[in-house]
Length: 262
Length: 359
Image 1 (cartoon, helix red, strand yellow):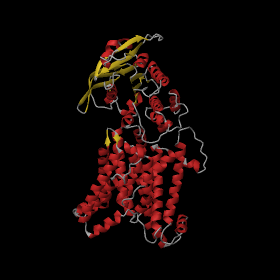
Image 2 (cartoon, each protein chain N blue to C red):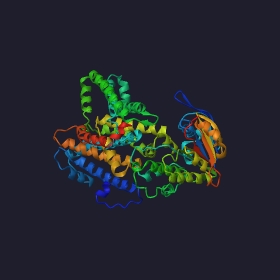
Image 3 (tube, rainbow over the protein chains, first blue to last red):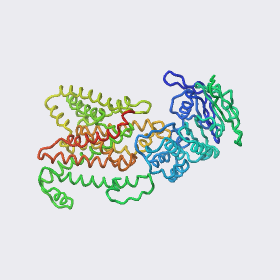
């Protein structure tokens, strides 16, 4: 279980996060949603240790800052929003960077399996630079998957932190990537994803944190969080939540109203 | 690619895996270095057939005193020093490019060599003013250590100035390098002004950028520092590869980023400082060698760093042979040879990477 308590964070003098509380269970996919600038990515970066914060982030009861970098890397992988590359590595070489991170013996066929998983089989020999934005995103996802290939290891959950994993993808690949994340969670791993698309979030997330202006609006399941009232408040526009007619789980789906902004 | 063009069949074990290719280039460069070492021992202005003497000596036959002196007192230290300096220049270029995440970083271009040079100059000039007891204490190590300190300070300064939030601005890096070069040049000028005649001779000799002054003593002074710096590189390889993805991601991959960066900076400073201390300002090796290698084996530092050392050593021995034969019996400073090759090459790299400057 990942627990973030009382997170405060400022960049320069500008306060970004105010007393944010956040929980994510292993075996679940937990989404962080909210409007632009609401602090979603900043919260994720605080939890990954990229930005200094006040408050406590624990992983299975241990303060993450007290876990040595190599053992943390063996249990938790982070997919950044965009990843440029300084030198012309091939796709295979990029994915292999994940292979060396985890502790213990690793199967050298993992990179190829991970690439097949994200729909990039046969791309091994291509230069990363020559890929499209969406392909680069999936290549990075393969690297991240290689790093924590087993959703649970020695009885402990592995964690995936994904910062807008589907932002550059077409709908087919969005579903593919979300399904990978979903399966990882179903197999006992923990997934935390910063999301923009509320409908995808509704379809795949077990728990949703809704943020606005660096504060928690509400955290709960889709039926609770994705309501007309909460969403209108957080996003500053009127939305109507319906129930997907073809969806077996009665997941809410969201339609924005045209015009009359509040 | 180079291997395939050379006609050696190379079935790729796995698409995108260039390690077999890299191993082949490694062997090729090792052989090249060996050839260059033998050539460097035997080619020169003396006119005698030293190759025969060398083989005679190797098979246990007696050789003449003149040949012995030329081979072991002049050529051998020069060859070994040339190989070590070439290796350290190429490796410090490759490490610096990995650290700054940019193929245009080079100790000579961004003022690190100038900083190391200033350290050496200050040691030569100010060292003469120190109490004799102190001079005895540090002895012949003063100049290389001062050069190392100068290189280290300028690398740190440069990194601090050019890198913000884990991103290095190339424009800032190059401009800061110019500022650093101007400042060190000014201080160096003051030092020259303060120097006495004897020191002036030392400075001039040193400033030409030459391996001509190579002695066993210089080798023993600079050698350990260079070997130490080169010995760190296997531990840097994985970290520099991960750093390609950015500092944050390298950290998430389990790399102790700050420690790795400190070691990389010390490595650059040690290798550059020692090289500059014994050979003056020899430019462009650090740009040319790693860049050529990346074209053939890819950017993975696991192979790039050791092969850069081999190719850099071979390259500098080749340049040294040109420098001492082209106007024989006189000598052209080796810095002129490397700059003649490296200058146009750098322009070519710059033009190909023009987009990087907009970062």
